[in-house]
Image 1 (cartoon, helix red, strand yellow):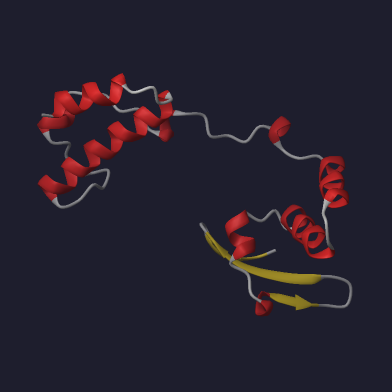
Image 2: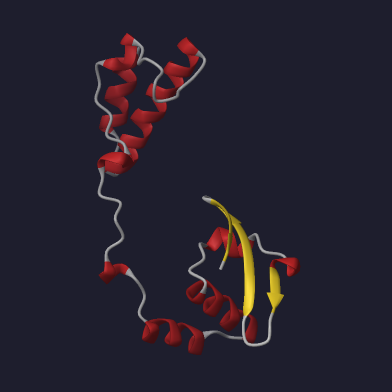
Length: 131
């Protein structure tokens, strides 16, 4: 059965990364079904141990300087914004180095205005932080 599923995944016209993700999901599903966990220390069931799975850990996840926005690009985005709210969103994302999810999770109470600056408290994927 698993070989048929493996063959089906490989025959699809998906990107390689999508196929890798599908194979990983199948492996984790069988692992959870057999052992009740899919943590790293949980053994891989023999039914799915025969196929290799490339995970995102195998890739170079380092952010390269050339992939970061420059101040000129941020200013161009702010100039292209249709209203003051959108300009503020772009500015806060850049200045506080927020992830989009952190910005979207903010409430009015997350911002404390000081004399010459403001403190922004956010909860993100790495926990709570003040920017």
